[in-house]
Length: 360
Ligand SMILES: [Zn+2]
Image (cartoon, rainbow, N blue to C red; front, side):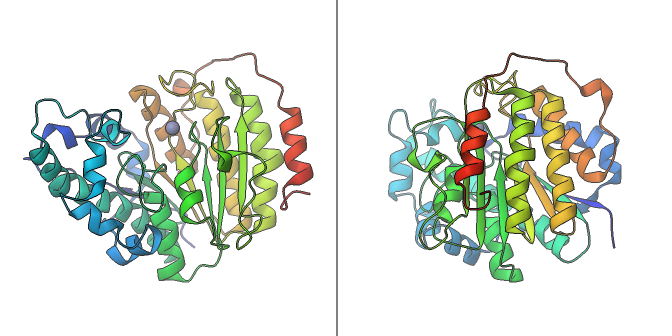
């Protein structure tokens, strides 16, 4: 059996792509990965756009048609003030609306299809036995994109899960999301699908579906595990949640494949997240999830997209995640020494242990 780690990378945009679809942060991340020693050990995977049939199965069937239609509500909503979409597609400074929309359709949509294709490519290589595990290095990571809307175009990891179910006949796929913000997209897309286990660790916020009490619909009971954490939760609390909640639930649920949303905005240096994890904290989480995959599903784990809102932190944490997947030691020079005073989450862990169907 192969022990290699696959790497599926979002291909570069065409040279004539306009500035508002460029990924400057992603280029920085990709260059750093390609320059690192770990890169030589990775199996480079070919990436093609995700099949539109997979998009129609995961997102609302007509959603992909709306993404292709400049007159659709998707684009009209993006143009409204304070639209979430403008975060993703930059602010439309000095660009006429019609030109902007045409640019999104011509460049951003193919790019999103390729990003999801990178996830599917990694999954295909794992399931075909060409690599033991894989990383999909893509820009963005649309974990807020639901069935038919969101802060982005496509939900890459959800499309990967759909691909594994539809094209490879898997019956049990787990998605673990430790982005600082609730992974609402996967929860919404697979809310009634008992084949997908949805686990999100996130800052405590108001969405009812992000709370401890939400454990899945009647059609898919016990398939949602929410861990809403207080601000500044930090390394020790995350490690406790992983060891005492997430891994026991995964052991009980027995996935055939684990997908991990690896976006590092829960880092202490991140300008958006407030969760105070360090590089070492993320490395411990990723190492524990890799060990869990080795134990429960023959090592079948895919991580992605990589990065975060702090470019250098995103690079360091992504490189560490790649080393962990490849079975290489962490780079000691990349370890920060941040420590913080952490809130007590004993009650939260007790509550989850006593009430979640996979833990009680
Ligand atoms: Zn986030």
